[in-house]
Image 1 (cartoon, rainbow, N blue to C red):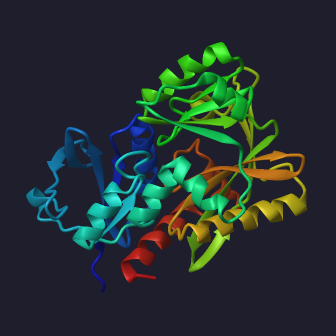
Image 2: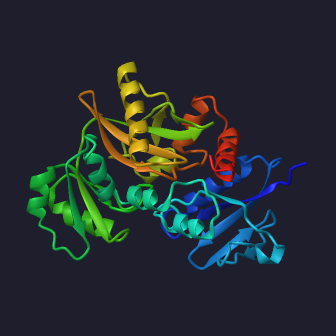
Image 3: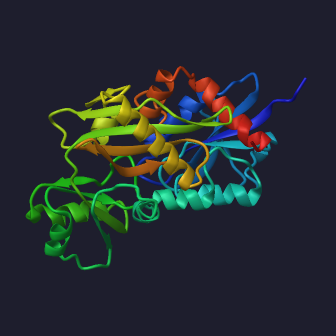
Length: 328
């Protein structure tokens, strides 16, 4: 009889997304196959790294080898469910790669690249991926508001360059509101991206590597309710949006966006999960961004798409862990 492998599910993180990540991580814990794995929920927080058992008891992690000394537990592989830093920006990937512990997310460089919206857009632009006009600012820059508006127009979106879950994002309708939006975004990050507003249908599509095949999942259409100018935090996580899977778009567009999402996945040399977002304007999809640790909560988009594809989360997560253990 094969011995069960010890699998860590890391969750939490250092960003505003830590509470969402804890929920995502718990969904993974619930769905991993306990007949195959011993599953250890591990909270990675600014003030502590701890394994938290079913009773809520905490056991410190030895950062030198990512073991649980009090239980004499060595970890065989890691399922990464941390949204934002340090799970989505390359730091945890680099740490586990140095320790030679396999993990379910992409490699350090791919994580750092996709987390940096400006750099990711620059790479994909070379592959003729269509995207909105944008303007980049660092925290110490003195913003030329006229130049920004001249380049991207109004309305526009102001967003942290390296953040997720719509934290720090504003839709700016008039120039006098631009500085306040920049200030809000700079509270989340030291770099900000201002993007032209694209008036169209927003869709998102997950791409997974399942049973050794790269698959685009059914596309979801995002329809924020009338109280939301865009797909913000409340729309994403508090049910204040309509999410339609499959999206109400033509078969031709569905095929094109699915292939484009897979092409982006391959161009960026991704592994594991990803979810890419597009805005369709006049039947042309414009790429917004890609997420390498998409939300996995009951409200999240990728689990909805997985279900629509006829794949269970248990099968998907188990397949992901088995792939990294075997090195496939």
